[in-house]
Image: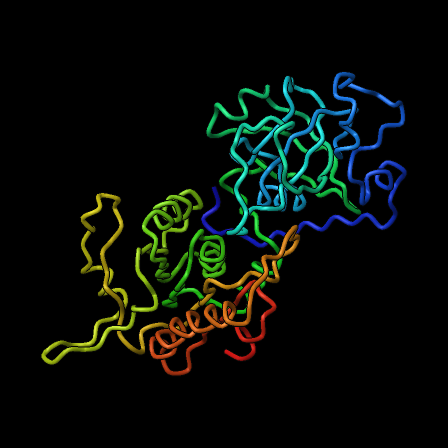
Length: 354
């Protein structure tokens, strides 16, 4: 394990699509040049939109978006499947498009394909890593290895490659840490750090020298982030379960201003028995740099299989919540300090209008 991680950008470009790629591009079912029919007792299967040449597996929308970014399918993401899927069988992958829409009923995990009545989109072809019953009996593990996606190019899966030595990020996320410009020895606050990818990148750019206070109000998320920081050797990060909209402390009468390091050193472990320190917040003029990547409407995430309809009123609620972070962040900065504000949305009221 390296104590200092370096940026690694992998670029894969297919400027010319071969015949196999063309045959999968924008398909709703996999090509079937030999007219294979695995379902002679289901005469209207093709009319219902399912392939006759392959058994089908349906994953949730978020799993489907990960597949289009190059991920394989893990069992927790599988919702429904044809009966009798076997190990090493080539299957057709689909993504359910209803995930995240409040007014739609969710698909019960384990549903047979015949019972599926939702809307889905063809993702591509994969090889089943286990039999059908294991998809729903297991809580962890690989379910399907993706062979080819139904898009203009197939991204390689990097799962389990240099595990513990390489951290995967989308390119926009990589840019955020560089925009912040952290330097070794500085004191930095990440106000909404979970799951921890950007925080770890900042630690890398600081050569793991200095102090990074990493916050999220969810203790469960921060326990997971802490374990991730440790696995990456980022010892300069102090994880806190802290609501950053309430992180600015006033110096009370008779008290003195305390540096972030002093606050952290004097904090005790919380009563939740999870090992996280219990700190209430920090004082004005404390941090050299602040990274603020607040919750947002996520309208800019790509690939995105479905955009949930958002009214102007709903979008304005995101912006108002984000302003609560900003109102705490600005006074926490030292004079001349730098704050990087980033979102994954294209909504102006959450960005330029902030």
